[in-house]
Image (cartoon, rainbow, N blue to C red; front, side, top):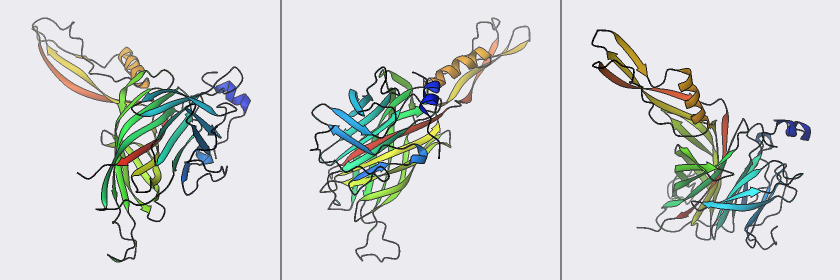
Length: 365
């Protein structure tokens, strides 16, 4: 298990130094196993997923989150903005309390509420967690296959403590309540293990503190097929992944619930782990033959200054465009051939994303 920092070590290495009891989603807190039949937590002390309670106070539009270190003695998070239907919240910080700024995302509908949070000022990806709560459960009735559409929100942090991003996206899920048959069962015997599969696309992000856009958008997340328990509507150990140039970029898991008295909602938490930033940069290479027969090459990516400037942009999450070759020094009258080459730049820091999704069943067309 990764050892938690002492307060002295924490302060030395920081990169910058309730509810009213009527919420229908409330459940008792168990610090060792906070999940229950209607409340599912991303909880693993070894991986620093420590959140074990979250309550939404509708009157004040605040979250109260428990068990994240140094986010303030009351665990109160105030809404700072809304992005694409996702509420963005921030922990309170004073001169002596809440010394590590934390951010959270939150969504809810009549059936479910989902929340995720993480600290942004650790020397690694820090502590965080996520929660999915529902107020009831039943499977949808009807044709047996359904489309669910909704929204994704997350807090993305880095292993070098360089701030945090808020990520939002669109979610598409497919639910089949009739397949697969339970292992060993026979078709028509009434024993079912339904399946869910989907993806998250259009992932855009902003600076968690300022809301400024981060221009290099993130790739689509594959939510691999997972089976759910038909008695509880719960699913576990689904695999998440994203790709870059034909290779896997990020990997993680997704777990959650079918919710609602008519099974009209699906909510889940999502994790992704991979490089903090990676881009494949295109650049020009111009080969010329001068009138006197001499030849030469100029490139949009050769000098150390080119590399330093481009790396800084990649590291900041800025989208890097085509790097053109400076042809101003090519002799007049030269014949010039231009080719496009690529280079992939990946930061040394790792990234971790803790997110949640909330979807609702689309009506039959």
